[in-house]
Length: 305
Image (cartoon, rainbow, N blue to C red; front, side, top):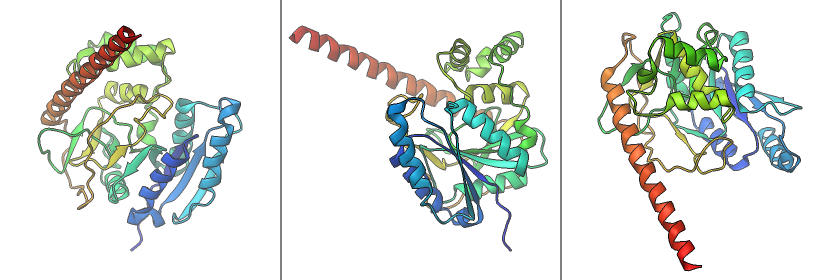
């Protein structure tokens, strides 16, 4: 029996090679041919970007292999945040659920199965806000699936009932986190500067929709379902993205077997949280080491001139 799959909202801009890899990986999912693909193509912000935007649009028109393909070409530049917020709102309102992808994510062949299985199983569980396809490389094995009071943005899915909880008002979200004394929790036990990211969004130093979605989920006491093995890999951390910095993370996607979505109670996993915390501390050490190396190279370079 053919299942009804959630539509895939794919947000693209000006990275042809990244987009091609993203689409190619999705097409290796058996459920691709049963999934509607809705591509949101933002307009160029500057004239010099127009050829790259057009190259992406030309490529998308050649794609085959999905149940259907709809292309939404913006005539004015919305920016990443507005593009995603508007697109997710439109698709989730129309279809009740949506799988969200950006143009720099490579997926496992089992990604769409996990998204749809999770959406089906927890559709009526009000506490569950999203299905996440990613978690970083942990130092311990975790259960087949687990829950976190959190929200990831590297390949995820949600329902209209949950997305309606999204609050775009950064100052309100920050004030509420402080009022409830939730800063330490929001920063994953002070292991990652999420509060600073929200402050930067408010100050206009970033245009992150994801930090506001994360705050909305946490403030509503909601959960995300995670796979025990990551199903997505971000290929945009090479400095090519709008907001992404160059970063190299080892990723081992679940290619050998699917991640089973079973009837796991919707309860936050402290074991998984501690794995996130240890990873964040390790990442901070890597970043500090890289910063020191860059400074030393600069000093050596100055000394040689």
